Amino acid sequence: MCRFVSMLLGVALAAIVALVGVTLAFRNALARERRLARTDDVTGVRSARAFYEAAAMEIERSRRYPHPFSVACVDLGTRVGDELLRSTAAALRGALRATDLIARLGRDEFIILMPETPAAATKIVLEKLRTGLLEVRTGDGRQMRTSIGGVTFVEPPAGVDDIVRAADERIADAKATGQVSHAAWSATSSAPEGR
Image 1: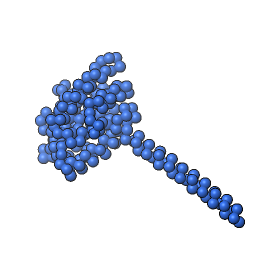
Image 2: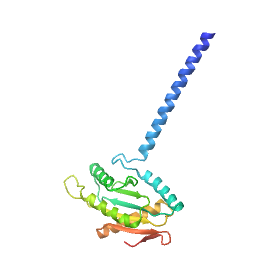
Image 3: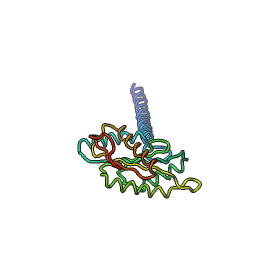
Image 4: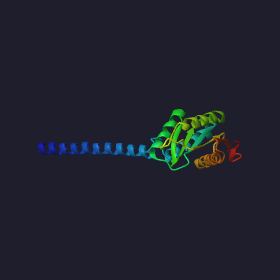
């Protein structure tokens, strides 16, 4: 009987160890999938999903502790290959602070969340981005035609869609003028102000 109980305990212990192993493997796989869902696989920057999450948190922080924050958007203008996307992401990383979040919003578009960044600092960053991107070349050596726009939110917008919409308006202005476009945004006007 004692031998039977001992065997039964051994089998139960082996089953528990196997179950713990499967649980740990599942947790690791889940953490890996979560990380991949928030990272663009081509460029290594954050995904649109990660940007939406971070921007929503920044809106809440701005409501609680009133401070401006800014967003910059970079549109590469034409369909580009993976290597050019990676080069652009590297140039963006080189021009920004570690606390800024770079995300790939669409095929040819990057968006950058810059916490606690007022308008004057944003204009400097936009110029830094423009200069950094001048060095990025297409596969045949041509300079890219990028459009860069930025918005400083002096008051928090209602939601992340307002952020994206305001950034898209700055990109449209940058494409039309051929220059970097920047505006300040306030909730009272519900639209960007100035250039």
